[in-house]
Image 1 (tube, rainbow, N blue to C red):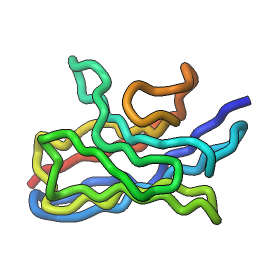
Image 2 (cartoon, rainbow, N blue to C red; image 1 turned 180 degrees about the horizontal axis):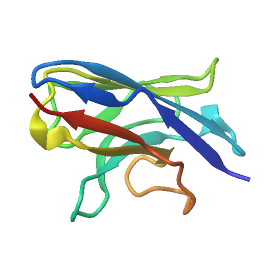
Image 3 (cartoon, rainbow, N blue to C red; image 1 turned 90 degrees about the vertical axis):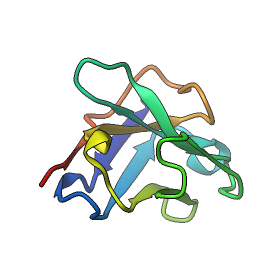
Length: 118
């Protein structure tokens, strides 16, 4: 059974930083590309960042390019998202899933809430 557990969200002021973590089980983590997605109220889920299975190649949404960094620890089986210079429009629930573009699995974790507000 595929499972994702996201953590690390919280309330932060504009310009602040957070690091999200995602643990995954039920599939071969180091053999899969992984991505972060987010969903804000009234909007669909969008991909924020993705990385290849070995973590050497990454992609980012234009809105976060230069501010977010995705990384993948294939020893600990953890996916990270370092978020810097956060903006109010980054407020959303953040999720992880396998895949480099579209999510591979239909199941999702509970997500982690990120709120950027003064």
